[in-house]
Amino acid sequence: MNSTDSIRAIQDNIALVIKGKAHVIEMVVVCLLARGHLLLEDVPGVGKTTLAHSLARSLDCSFKRIQFTSDLLPSDIVGISMFNRQKQSFEFIPGPIFANVVLADEINRTTPKTQSSLLEAMSEAQVSVDNQTHPLEQPFMVIATQNPAEYHGTFPLPESQLDRFLMRLCIGYPALEDERKVLDRPHSMHPAETLEAVLSASEILALQAHVDLVHMEESLMDYLLAIVQATRQSELLSLGVSTRGALGLSKAAKALAVIRKAIISPPDDCQGFRTQSFEQAERMVLDIVETVPVPV
Image (cartoon, rainbow, N blue to C red; front, side):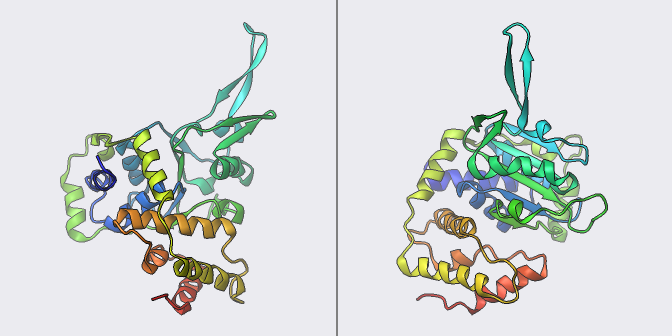
């Protein structure tokens, strides 16, 4: 399959389970192609975990789910060194972070110490245990979920953790007809379990490499940087967009351009990740985006 067919195949496959959420599915695929990580923040029962499962089932890659709880330890995620009596040496036992797609379910229900065990993996695609560095297999993507409406027994994600997510998306409730389709299908098994893989690991890596080759015209780069600078200069925001965030926005714009078959990333692609807002700070960012002149 060419890149267009591959992208359409994965979007259509996820849409078999996630009804009426074409934009959300598109943004998930953008995140995948941009080598980013995704935070799904929404109320319980709208399909956050199902969306993650649907993406993982659509890829012929390894998948691990980690249920985050208050008693979870960093070693439960990254792994641990065990003494092998037969070999008379320590042996590293990999944790569930060693997978192509990792679902960090209810990530804010574990302590900051355990949350921080994801930082190296998300930024450098590797983990360090007992002074030994272990690379993670590519492609690698973390999809985390959290419920913004519940605070009892939760630990807010620190800025260092949030900065490693390329996107934060809300699924929202389905439209009436889409919800009817969900209710009409059989419930004897998880809906994502019916999906077949449509892309291999090598095909995903090829798509990611294709995104890297997309050229961003100079005026559009200036536009992106103007948005970034405006967030840093705003008196209403305590922290502006980091360099990692600017790089992520650039990669996401290129990935969206590939998905929409554009040769050069148009300005709307630099704005295309503003449709989901959750807090006052995000509304301020949207206002900033509106005030920065769009290049012609």
